[in-house]
Amino acid sequence: MNERDVYLNDEIDLKEIFDVLWAAKMLIIQITAFFAVASVTYSLLLTNYYKSESLLIARNASESQGLSQYSGLAAMAGINLPSSGEDRAAQTIELIKSRKFIKHLLEFEDVLPSIMAAKKYNHASGKLSFYKDIYDAKERSWIKKPTYLQAHKHFRKMLNISQDTATGFITIEIEHISPIFAKEFLELIINEANVLLRNKDMEESKQGLEYLTSELSKTSFVEIQESINALIEAQLEKQMMTQINEDYILIEIEPPFIPEEKSKPSRAIICILGTMLGGILSLMIVLVRHYYFSLDN
Image 1 (cartoon, rainbow, N blue to C red):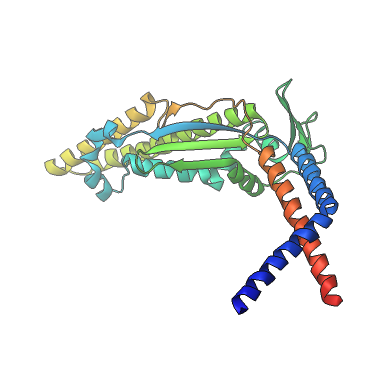
Image 2: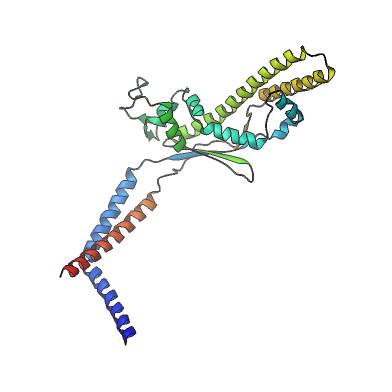
C-alpha cells in the first residue's frame, strides 16, 4: 500500500506541474519569445570574422646532410650548424608566437592600426575603418597609441599555430574582420619568419668563418688544419643554403587565401541557445513562483 501511495503521489505531482505550466503558458511563451528576439538582435550586432590559413612544412635537415658530419666538431668550436627539421619547426613556431616577432612586424605600415584599431570592414571597397578615438586614418596618427605588448596580446588572439606530430605539417591561421588583411598578414608572417631565420643563420655563419680563418692561420698541425678546413667548408655550405632558398625554413604546401565565408560568429547557434535559455528560465520562474506561494500559504 505504501508503494502504491508513493506512486499515486508522484503521479499527482507530475500532473500538478503540468497544470501549473499549462496555466502559465502565455508567460512562458512571452519570456521565451523575448529571449529569442534578444538573441537574434544580439547575433546580428556581432562583427563577422574571417580566417585565412596556410599549410606548411619545415625544410628537412636532410637537404643539408653534408653539414651533419661536422656537427660534433662544430659544437666543440662553439659554432652552430643547421639543426634537424623538427628542431627548426619548433624554433620557428616559438619565434612566430614571441613578443620579439610581433615587435618586428609592427614596423610594417598599417599592421598596428589593423590589429588594434580596426572597427569595421567594407566589403564593397575592401577597406577597413578605424575607431576615431584611437587612430586618425586621414592623418595616419595615433590618438592613443598602444604598446607592442598590448599588440602582442591581440596578435595571440588572432593567431592559431600548431604542428601535427605525426606528419610534421604546420598549420597557421589568422582571424580578422578583414578577409584581405587576414590573408596579407599571414603572408607577411610566413615571409618574415623565413627572413629573420635566414639572416640569423647568415650572421652566425659569417662570424664562424671569421673565427675559423683566424684560427687556421695560428696552427701548424696538419690534423687541426684539416678539421678547421672541414668546418669552413660546412659554413660555406650553410651560407649557400641561406642564399638559394627563398622559403628558407617554412615551405608552403597550401598558401594563404582570402576567405569568402565568415569563421564566426555562428548566429544560428546563438539564436538556438538563447531561445532554449529563455524557455528553461521561464519554466523555472513559473515553478518557483508557484511553489513559493504554495509554501507561504
